[in-house]
Length: 619
Image (cartoon, rainbow, N blue to C red):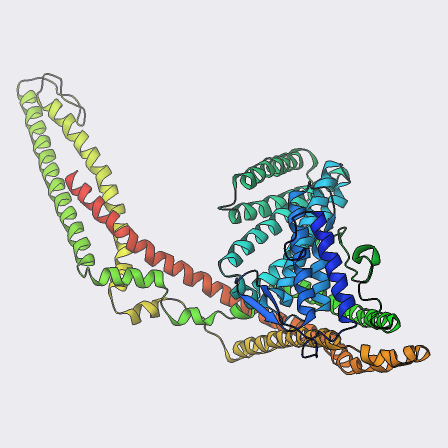
């Protein structure tokens, strides 16, 4: 009763641990497991869906208590001052490693992995904050921050799992966005401190690139922080002031004083995370936690102790296998990250088979305005007509003025006066001078208008073809968009690359499946009944015999891990051949995007051209 209505404090944690331990003692004496004689229905409410889930299995009760222990620890951690590096991950880790994941969806392997890494990440954040307040060495702070990033990356992987996404619903997107924001933010903090270390070592070029990388990552974090509380925004602004100031000052110093070459970021050693947080351990049989065993008199303790020893042997076997798997996975993840090959978009050929929606929208808009091109041409013709008329009028006026001027000169000569040289204005007394001056002014303005008019015509000619294309049949629009011309060899290269990427995925999936099978085998492997009837001197032999059942799956896992080197070598070779195709596809994609943008720009320029041509006519 106390464990179900547990108080939200450390007393509550003790109650849960005590109850969990007593359940452990109880199950070793009385057959209350799934499909055993004394099993009773146990009901709990699932955290995300709110549904009641019932199992006739005492282990389900233990699993739910463990989950709540982890949850309560995380609540107390959130309320506590950020000084402790112990965290709630222990209960979730024990639950993941010692219990079936099929009881309820919120206890699935992925959800528990998510919880574990969220707890470890937040605990490492507390440690990071402490190490910064304690002014620890820059390199250590960078490594602690890099580890925060690693934990959150693992959490993000769990969040991206389709099973997790469907379970969490809307909050999955919010959590993923927040976790991604934290990944970028703490990556920025790590590089800020790598930059500080470079500064201490007087490597001024390195300093610039680390601060620049920190600035880039912080900008990504700021983009993802949209909608986060003001406290977060304030922290981001403050960090931006720090990193921005550091970068500007470092760049200026290097440009004007040190003149050191700024290396490429990927040429520098990557920052390896330093995991310094510890999950609070869970030991179901620690008397200091569980109190006296209520059921001590029911079953021989020797059998129970032997069972615990066997569980430890199984846990050791799992730890050894997992260490190998994780080492290979780390190599694989780093390799795939460096390749930047997404199986979904390796060839992106699908995009060329249809007109993009943004262009379809413009075609549709023009289809209900069939006179677009005609209207534009007419508008420009009207402008040209007016322009020609004005030009003719001005020419006529100028001709008349020149004729009058010639007459005036003749008259002056007849009267015996010496007129000014040809091309010089007549004396002010002549009424023509004023008119002539006015005419010159209009001619000058007309020249300027002529230039504007020509520019407008150029713009129209630039867009009119595109507008005609958009108004025409969709087939023509599609034909006008660039598409890749791949040779048979190119297609072969692509197929080969996709085949090997599929092989990588198959290897990953098989590895995950084998790991899952191993965990389930270990989970179901209970030899207590045998232990009760086995002589103590025979225990070691029995353990060895029983552990042989794992040999076959270990062989399969070893083969899977050994295959990785060959698969990655084949992928490297395929990627080298793919480089030229990748470049060609990238160029076509660039041309395709440019063409689409040009066509959209022509559509958007239409209204502007109409307006300008009307203004030209009015002018």
